[in-house]
Image (tube, rainbow, N blue to C red; front, side):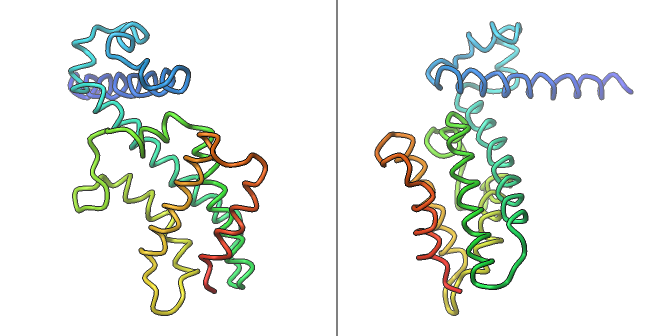
Length: 198
């Protein structure tokens, strides 16, 4: 291995450590606790080392968001695949319900990551050409299953946007304690039955 390759590998490892530490700190204490000073202390590097990787907290939030989007996409695909490939109306609804549950479970298990993805300014652009691939892939993971539930003459991308917005609303309102506890499954089936036009 050349010196340059070793330095690149070490740099990538430091970057992963910074992102993992920021994510851990945010999950433990919230994003307000994530500062470059605290990160530098936790990873035992100087603040200038952090700034050589990220220009500030905003870029760190963006990196956590991209990591989260990749994880969410993988979980959504696994949930849909795990629900089977049945083409009957009930089979398709089951896949869409599994997709919804996976999304809501991810948001509940990873509140700080979810905030980085959808609530905080990480400097990321959504719904545009310059949208990072990880974000596009997260949307694609929803779209792949929802294509099967769109009715004739209905744009699958539009259905996916409405479904995603509904899931985001459920995740956000549930986390804030604005919805009664215990009805999550009924909400999922109501959403699926209203959107699933098969």
